[in-house]
Each structure stands twice: as structure tokens, then as C-alpha cells.
Length: 401
Image (cartoon, rainbow, N blue to C red; front, side):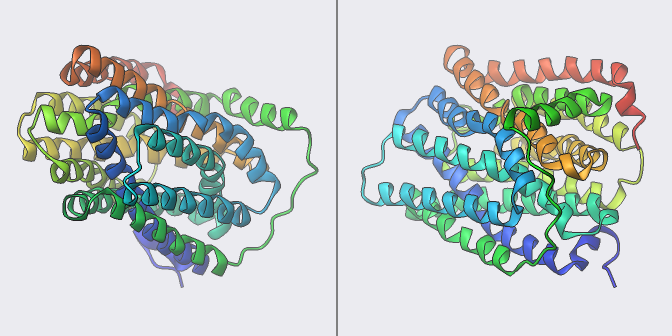
């Protein structure tokens, strides 16, 4: 008997193992992301370096097109074991550099690049793997629970990083992350899935072209890809400069940085719960509504000079942006056929993770040039104009259940 409502997908043993393992690992991942951003800002006192680190971690997302092909060719569980182990080793190296007092900004950027390469193969497999863990009727719920899991970690990880960083230093944040990967590795070893039938492999060029052709040839997926890219570039760029914003605009420290970044995760968590509980039809309209409201929260954040109010506005922003990303993922996954799932998801991931580094480096450069306030306001205004245009022009998506 399957649990009702929000937690229906947890009725499947494999999904329960995956959920528990990923949750433990992702808390460590968010601890590292938060501590790493503050560490590089402490070392350089430059918002531009925050952008460089964000660019380094996201630029390899273009390799996700190859990752999608690999995900469709080999067992995704095995691929995930390889990528998760690689990420664990990278986190351990960064921890060792900090403990040895040898860490330099270029170390952080180089390891971020390595993490981005591993993630380019991990992300398509991880997002497609849900379809192997639950029955198809529970796929949308499984995707929603994935978002809940991700944002539980996104709320807890940065707050924990702020406390640990302040008390023990950055090295312990990275060390915790390295050990946290053991949770998902153990879960993957315990999961037993039925091997899906693999088609005859074509050349990489043909298989990548097939995935890209389907993604951009479908009118709804094409609109979703544009929306995801615009939000990633103009809506998430401000996240890159939160350490600089917190110090210069709010007079905060590592603790406040962790709390503010955790506030985004809390909002996204609440949004994911709302989608899992209430998203029954009209998903296209819900996505576009979130797209309209998200930039308003960004602009409100730009005007705030109070840590508590800023945190509440970040909660609101996280809530509304979750309607965009969660429902975009769910709609794409319900459209794509199984034999193309990994490749189409790799295109989706490229439009998300591959454009985030553009937003990161642009936000960092503009903040260095014109200041953090101008950067956040510019992103909010551009995204507001795009959201209004999308509401009136994206009719195929607005009609999507």
C-alpha cells in the first residue's frame, strides 16, 4: 500500500533509499557551496571572484549533452556511483588544502571546475533515475519529492555551514561534505532496479542531435527551455553575490550569509510541498505565475536593508522560483519518451546549469563595476519584463495540464 498525497513515492523501497541517501549528501553539498563562497570572498574581497567560481562550476554543463548519452547507454545506478565518488574525492582534497593552510583562490576555482565536470554526467542520470525508482503514475510525485529533498538540504545546509564556519572554519564544512557522500553511495549500492532494455548505440553526434531535436522541436519543451535559461541567468545571478551583499549592504558575517542562503532553500522547500500537495492540473499556468512573482521578490530584496526582512523576501523568492523549476522539470519528464529521457534531460540541464555560470560571471562583473544594488535591481527588472511577455506569448505552455 502506497502512502497517500504528498509522500506517495516513498511507498517504493528503492525511492526511500534514494531519498534518504541523497538528503544526507545534499546537506553536505550545500554546506560546501556556502562555505566555499565565503572563503573565496575572504581570500580576495572581490565580488568578481565569486562570479569566477560560479562560472567554473557551471561552465562544464555543456558536457551534460554527452552525459545524457552516457545516461541512456549505461546503467544509471553505476554512473551515479562513479560521479558521486568523484565528488567525494574533490571535497576531501579541498578540505585537506584548507587544513594544511595551503588553499588559494585558484585551488577553489580549479576544484569547482572538476565538480562541474562530474556534475555534467551526474545531473542527467540523477534526474532520469527517478523513473526507474517509481511506477510511471508516481513520476510527478517523485520529482516533487526530489525537490522537497533538495530544498530541505538547501535550507539546512547553508545555515549549518554558517554556524560551523564561524565556530571551526571552512575546512570542517568541506570535510563534512566529503563524508556525506557516503550516505548516497551506500543507498545506491542497496538499490536494486530492473535493467532497462538499451537500444543499439548510434554515434555520439547522432544521439546528441536526436535529443536536441526532440527538445527544441516540441513547442512546450522549447518554451520551458527558454524560461529556465532566462531565470537562471537573470533571476539566480544575485545568489552568486550574496556573500558580498551580506557584508557590504547588511553588515553581516558568515552566520548571516548562511542564514540568508538557507532562507532561499526554506522558501523553495515550502514551494515544493505546495506543488506536491496541490498541483493537480494547470501546471503551465502555475509555472507562469511563479515566473511573474519571482522577480518581484528579487526587487523587494534589493530594497531591504534589514537582515530579517531580507531573509523573508528570499523565502518568498525561493517559493516562487520553485514553481518555475519544479513544474518545468515535471512537465518535460511527462512529455519525453523513455528512450530519449537522459538526452532530453541533459538539454534541460544545460539550459539550467549551463546558463547559471553566465549569470554568475555577469553578476560578479557588474557588481564589481556598478555595485551589488545595481546588479540585483537590473536582474529583477529584466526578468519582470520577460515574465510579462511570457504570460501572453507562451500559449502552448499556459494550456498545459
